[in-house]
Amino acid sequence: NGLLGFSSDYFVRNRSGLLATQSATLPDVVGVAFPQENLNGDRSRGIDLEVNHRNHIGDFYYNVKGILGITRTMNTTRVIARAGNSYLNWNNSTYTANRWNNLYWGYGSAGQFEDWNAIRNSNIYVPKNTVVGDYRYEDWNGDGAVNILDNHPISTAGLPTLTYGLTLNASYKNWDFNTTISGAGNVYVSYFEQLNTPLWAGGNALRQFLDRYHPADPNA
Image (tube, rainbow, N blue to C red; front, side, top):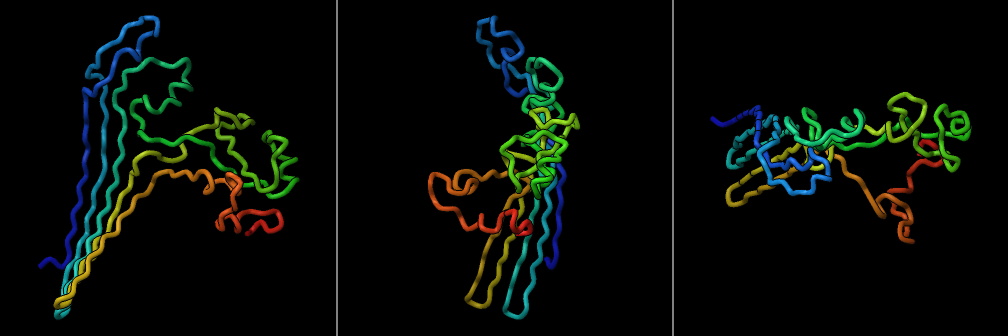
């Protein structure tokens, strides 16, 4: 009778023979251009869910449908020259096989410096211009210093891995109403310019900065 419907799909798509050139695996001194070949491969997997409900109460008819999709892609084959060491090979996620694509790399957060004693007694070196309220960066590899070696995947970038939507339909006699709500998630978005820096370009600060951390009121 259509009162309630549900569907789900799980999929895996394997591709091989994606175009690439062998030039990335040879020294620059070879000095010739190579044609594209069917060298690389990738795998996408995910799930799609849909739930819908429709009914009527007298002359009032309505329909509700929600959808949700999650998809990730990884390289399965990448023909490219090896980097100079194992860290660089691991760090180069664009060309690393058997790792999810679209990783966002950065430094983890270990909280904020709540007072000057926290800065003076930090067991990790901090620059001399560090002030109260600055973020503590995570010593991810535990070597006692925060540097480029602590850079690691912290989020996803590029296309969202999660998408969702909601459709609402209703009608009553000669009146009808339709709307669609959609969104995406699990993806990194970085603010810049005036959304990132107060007084950017000599302008005023946005209202969103008024409730940010301040030593006089750490809970603001």
